[in-house]
Image (cartoon, rainbow, N blue to C red; front, side, top):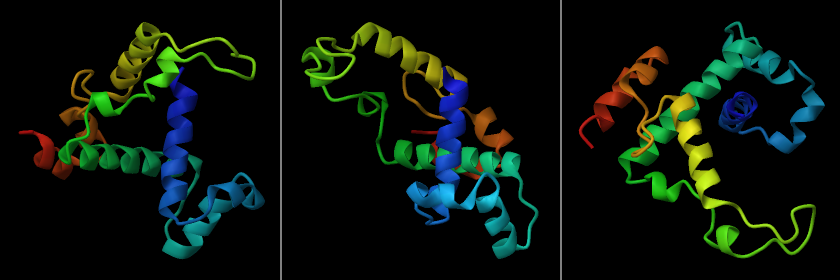
Length: 141
């Protein structure tokens, strides 16, 4: 489940940080944004580095949100998604199963190496991304 999700989230985090509209991103092709970053920064970029940068950004954003009080209860869907059936589309009549959603979120946090209860990224995860300074900001919260 999470592999493609992580890849998309990490890629979008990098794209968003370039202030480039992701809806127009297709005009650059598969390597366009990495080529653009290379031209701007003078550093060598490839798809792997692009995704690594996104993972760092995504985790740093999580640290910021955690420091500001964002917790698991905030990482959810609107209540009506669990109680009101969809009225159109292929899922018409269905509601999201709360237990299944919780299980998916547990798996997501585990795979991201974030605490399932607090959603705080682990010290090891942040260190592996060169974000040890962020751990110092959130370790006592």
